Length: 97
Image (tube, rainbow, N blue to C red; front, side, top):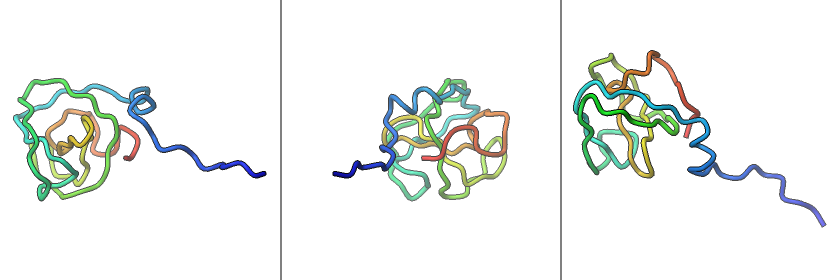
């Protein structure tokens, strides 16, 4: 009998251990996926603190902090462009989704 040795899919609980909170620097639409072609599912106001659970590449966006294709997952099915978040980095600050 052999065991399944594949790694489990990340869960919200596992991601929460690596999640960090950052300030949003301007009002931004929340999208259902990592890009501007995904539907708008909400809005975050500038000054709000958001938790980034993971990040992934998507549509390139120019925002208040520069130009990037990095999108931050701030909840299940909730993404914002990293160019609207003050992370202090031009690169990834969280695990990839």
